[in-house]
Length: 381
Ligand code: G3P
Ligand code: MG
Image (cartoon, rainbow, N blue to C red):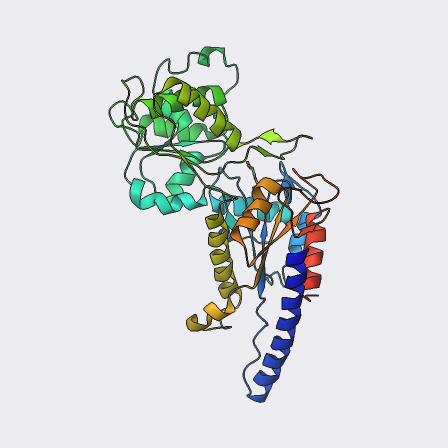
């Protein structure tokens, strides 16, 4: 509550300053510009906005309150999720449809969004993308040229998965066309070109096959079936042990897969697995989200300031609304000001009070309650 009450004081001070500013503008005949909000909101998705594909906690109405009557964005906000598996523009379309507002791709930050920053290093290198959805399409959209999904990569090695004949399900049905064209024209020769980087983009689907193939790639220096070699770099988009999803109790997430891979790899190799994990609760994710929110504000209120003034007008409060104390609230605690945390009871957290280890600034039932509190504190009607 401490963070929120200081936010309230800051909001009151800002309101006074805005009133004085407005008086000044009238006196000097400046054109009346719309008031630029001094706060922004970051919404977690799973367990706050959606469970599976179903909106929860009054999320459509909560999000609609951030838009003006004519449908233009009024309050700067974005989605800050450790999930992903589709390009940001596709997730923006999906969220727009589910929530009934116009979400732009710049308002979607996935766990894998920071992989863009690795483009220079891996742009022309053979890489493998792992996870549900369209992991290779995500990486190709970021500009990586030689990318294969782990499904396509594994399909070029006969017998790499000795259990494949026992798997009765059909894999990749929805992506048949991509699969066919990639098989005819793979972006690199998997039998002669070493994999230079492995990117876990979203939750892995076929854990058994993926653990086997990743151990092969990582132990052999990127050429399965060959002798031991230097481990290529390995990246995880997030490290969530569990997440909410649609089932009544939590599901194992990317962090659980990482633990499985790491313990197996370390048993069958002399050197321990090296890897880098992105996603919340890393403070750089929050820093990046704050920068994106600033840009969103500039997009909504383009005439409200010059470049020099940006520094003085940085958002004074950014509210993170999350359901997972270990991820969302811990991230805010690490990031520090201007971040302030609100924990909902619609996902991983179900407590009556607050989380003992990672206490949030405020605990509410739903995302709609969280937005009500924010708008009230910030004196927005
Ligand atoms: O797979 C998604 C999950 O790990 C977390 O999603 O939206 O709660 O950060 P979110
Ligand atoms: Mg969540």
